[in-house]
Length: 183
Image 1 (cartoon, rainbow, N blue to C red):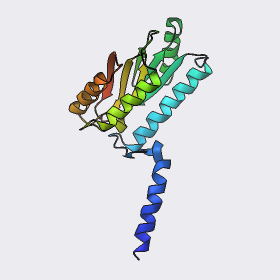
Image 2: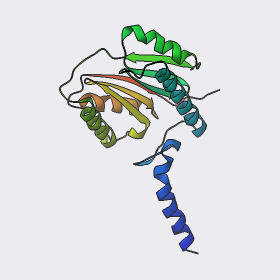
Image 3: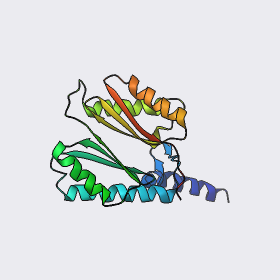
Image 4: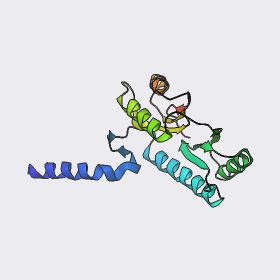
């Protein structure tokens, strides 16, 4: 009888990495405050908008990341001014609760975006009082955008402070949200 619980535990441990899109991450339980249905709806909305942008030639060297939390869509990237309104119009077709664009102007940084993003992620993971698994980041030439759902204002403040302390970060913009109730 004792073998069955152990077997279940082992199976769960092997299954966790495959459930990444279902609320789990490589570093443990993903404690997103949203309900699973809301997370699934947000992933579907973000994927639908991203696919529509790619179909409209936004994959030709322009980088747009698409995020959705509680049906609020965020477009983050470096896109020529002439294409920005087109990107917004495409996203509006899918009727998000709100639409926020964060357009980066071209810039250069001392460190590569990849290495800065890795350092930022490591620092967020190590920050006390912060569940970094709920925070998405975009890095562009030393400029950082934080997105996601945090449990409370203190957690939001910790994330912003942590990002600002990372060597090479020149600017931090936060779109971190508190849990919401959907009607």
